[in-house]
Image (tube, rainbow, N blue to C red; front, top):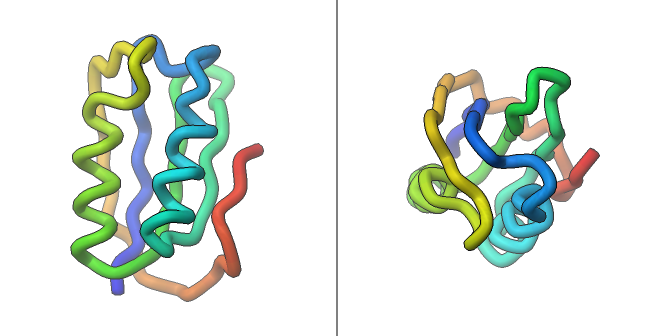
Length: 89
C-alpha cells in the first residue's frame, strides 16, 4: 500500500478537477482527499494499492478536459491507513 501527496498547479480550480479525482478514487478504491489551496493549486492526499496510486498520478498529469496541468509535485509519505473514503473539501 502507498500514500502520496500531490500538488497540482496550473488551471486546476473551477474545472471540476476535484470531482473528477473523487470519482476516479472511488472507482479505484483509493482513500484520501482533494482540496483547493489558497495559492490556486490543488492538493491531493491519497492512499491505496501501489498500482492504483500510480494510475491516479497519471490521471492527475492531464486532469479533466478544461484543466491545464502545468506541474505535479509528488511527495511519497508513510502509509497510515488514515482515511475511510475519499472526500473533497
